[in-house]
Length: 305
Ligand code: ADP
Image 1 (cartoon, rainbow, N blue to C red):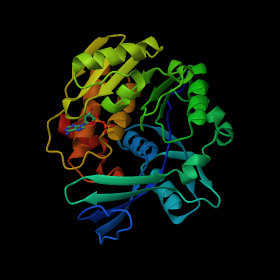
Image 2 (tube, helix red, strand yellow):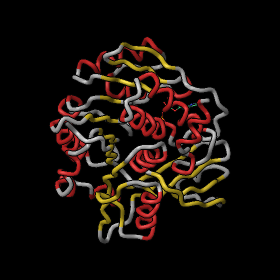
Image 3 (spheres, rainbow, N blue to C red):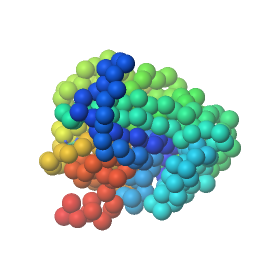
Image 4 (cartoon, rainbow, N blue to C red):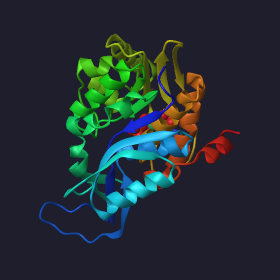
């Protein structure tokens, strides 16, 4: 019997954010303002969401041996996470995202994996026993794909459930898909994985059926403000989200995934777990930033009453 431990494996990034009036053209310099360095990375966002939303979370990741990396490890501990498998890589910077936000709200983003690329198969091999104790493992695709594949194999063969949020979008091997208990693409990611353009309940059903055909028991396709389409052993339905005034949808999907796995680990029924995840994500879109926008459990419970 697998333990109840929830493990998240994934990336840690320093998001360097600068507001500009308009993006510089090649060769041009523009003056920006409001420079901030904010904690990001899909792995860290989802681990922080799961921890704030009530999960007992272990995080597997690599940071650099720089100031940002050590501040992140401390912040993860402050959020109550088990950081024994967060590795500081010598002579490497923490992963980075350079984000320009234009006055019209558009983003232009360049990212570099840096220390995240050191989460190799060899690095993971030091933590296989720890990983094998996961009741549930949540991953994304900002880590080396061979590492994601090995982690999925390890947890699935030990009887744990593997949940993949397949972001950023990329095609995946049948071997990886076969080891998943659940996959949670957004519309774009679902299209990359299945070839079906997903925009509503009908197209989501077609995409979900293709993913079931790859051996995945539960498919949840998030549809932004529309909610999420869930197809699994108990049937298929569109579960609508909460209507809020959206300020910044950064990390909405990450908050949704963190909330979903926590609720499922607690034994909530699938539709209740999705409503809990919708509530957490809805609160996050009313606030700026990635990890800065993620609510805690009390805020979600209050929102739901
Ligand atoms: P991603 O951020 O990965 O692109 P989505 O945009 O599909 O993912 O959003 C994930 C979840 O976040 C949705 O299922 C919903 O719960 C919530 N969400 C996203 N946008 C909004 C919004 N404008 N209003 C309320 N909830 C939202």
